[in-house]
Amino acid sequence: MLTDAPNINEAATQMIKFHGSYQQYNRDDRGQRNYSFMLRTKNPCGKVSNELYLTMDDLADQFGIGTLRLTTRQTFQLHGVLKKDLKTVMSTIIKNMGSTLGACGDLNRNVLAPAAPFKRKDYLFAQQTAENIAALLTPQSGFYYDVWVDGERVMSAEPPEIVKARNDNSHGTNFSDSPEPIYGTQFLPRKFKIAVTVPTDNSVDILTNDIGVVIVSDNEGEPQGFNIYVGGGMGRTHRLETTFARLGEPLGYVPKEDILYAVKAIVVTQRENGRRDDRKYSRMKYLISSWGIEKFRSIVEHYYGKKFELFHELPEWEFKSYLGWHKQGDGSLFCGLHVDNGRIGGKMKKTLREIIQKYNLSVRLTPNQNIILCDIRNAWKRPITTALAQAGLLQPRYVDPLNITAMACPAFPLCPLAIIEAERGIPDILKRVRDVFEKVGLKYNESVVVRVTGCPNGCARPYMAELGLVGDGPNSYQIWLGGRPNQTSLARSFMDKVKVQDLEKVLEPLFYHWQRRRQSKESFGDFTTRMGFKKLKELVDKWEGPELATSRYNLKLFADKETYEAMDELAKLQNKNAHQLAMEVICNFVKPNGKGE
View 1: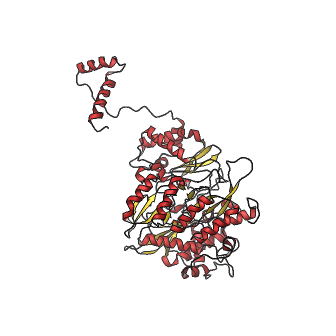
View 2: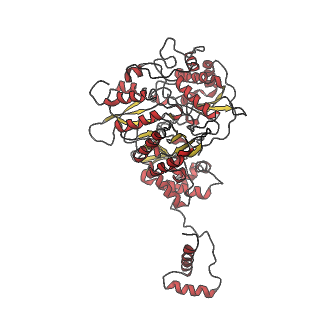
View 3: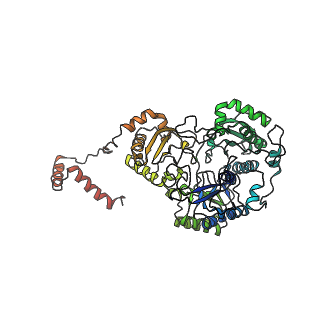
C-alpha cells in the first residue's frame, strides 16, 4: 500500500478482497493498464443511514467515477478508486457508520433480508435476524482497522447473545485461543451467502443462497422459529457439466432462540468439509450434492448439538419489488424507486442526494438493485414525487414492465471475468425484446424476467430467469429458459453461442408461440418448461416469421349489391378496393367524432 506503484502485488490482491475491495483495470483502454479499485460495502438487509448515503455519494464524485452502483446483494459498489486514495476512502466509510469488511473474499458475504421498512413483527424480526447473523460471522481480527483507521475501532458494542453464540464451543465448532474462533486462519473454502425472509416474500431470491432462513410465526403473527434451506448457489463454468447452478433444499426447522447456533453449525460443516483443492467445486452446494441432504443434516446436527425439527409448510412465494409509495405502518410512508441496473448517476444521483439530505431520510437497498426512501411524512409526498419525476425517477406504472424485473452484472469495462457486455448491453436488449413483443402481438403490460451476465459466474442470478443470457463468447450469449417469475425454478441451458445480432431469430419464435399456445395466465418460463426444449428448438429452426394476421373482425360492410358497386367504382379511382375505401371512410368518421383522439 505504501509504494508509488498504481497497483498491488498478487498476495495483497488476495488479502484486500477480505477488506471488500477488488483490484481492476479498464479493459476498454489499450496499451498500459490503468489500475483502480472497486470497493463494496457491507449493509445487512440493505440498511443505509442518512449519513452513510451522503458519504458514499460524496466519495463517488471525489474519488470514484461519479456513479454509485447498487448490487444484487443490497450493497454499494464504488468504482474507480485509485490506490493512493484507498485509505482516505476506506477510513471515511468506516467513520461514517459504514464497513467494507468481509464484503468480498472467502467468508460470509452481505446477509440479505426484505428491504421494505414495514413496522410489522415478522419484517422487523427478519431484518434483526439478518443483522445478528452478519455480526456473528464478521471477521474478528483487528487488522482491517489497523490498516485503514490506524487501529481505531469504530464499532458499537455487540449484543451479548451474539458474543455468546460466537464464543460457544460446546460442540467443537471453534478454534480455541484464536482471534478468529469461527474462521481460524484458513477462513471458508469459498464465499458464503445467507438470506433471511418472511413467508411469501421472495424479494431475496431465497433459494439461491448457501443458507436461506424463513421466519415461521404463530396465528397471532408472533415469530416462533425458522425454516432453513441449504445448498443454493449460482456459479458454474461453461462446458463443464460437473459445475452447476443449484436451488437450496429444506434442512429443517429450529426455534428462534437457536438460529445463531444452527447457522454457525452449517458454516462450520462447510468450513471443515468443503473442498479446498479446486475452487470450482468449493461452494457448499457441491458438498451437499455429493453427500446428500441426510448425511449433511447429521453432520450439522453434530455441531448444532440438537436434531432439527421438521420443516414447516410454507405458502407460495411471490416476487415483491416494493416500487412506488407504501405505508410503513407507523404513520410514515416509504417510496421504492426503480434504478436501471442499479447504476445511480447524473441528474438522478443529484436529485436523490438533494431529497435524502433535505428530508434527512434513511434508505434501503433492494436485492433487485433498487432503492427505497424511508420514513417520509405524508406532507412530503407531493414535493418528493415532483422532484423525482423531474429527475426521471418514475412511478412504477411509467417504467417498462421488462425493466422492473431485469438485472445485469457490471461486466465490461472493469470486471476481469467478463466475456461480453451485460450492464452496458441490457438497455438495448430490453428494447429489442419489447420490439419483438409488439411484433408478435404481446401487450405492453406483459413481461418476462430477463437477466444478463457477462460470464457464467451468475452474479445477476441469470439461472433463475425466465430468459437468462449468459456470456459465452466475445459476441455471443448462452440462452437459458425456464425460471419462474417468483424465482422458485431453475432455468436450463437452451442454446449456446447465439450471436448478439441474432437474438431475434431465437426470441421471435419463442415469444410468438408463447403468445398463441400458452394456457391461462401461463408465464413464459412455465410455457417453455411445458413445451420442452426439443419442441422449442424445432419451432426456432423452422421459423420464417410471424404468419400474416387475418382480420380479427368479420365485419359485413355492405348490406346490398348497389352500395358495394358504387363504392367499388369510387375505390378504383384511387387504386383501392371497395373494402379498403369503406374502412378509410369509417376510420376518418370515427376519429374526430368518437374517442379515437
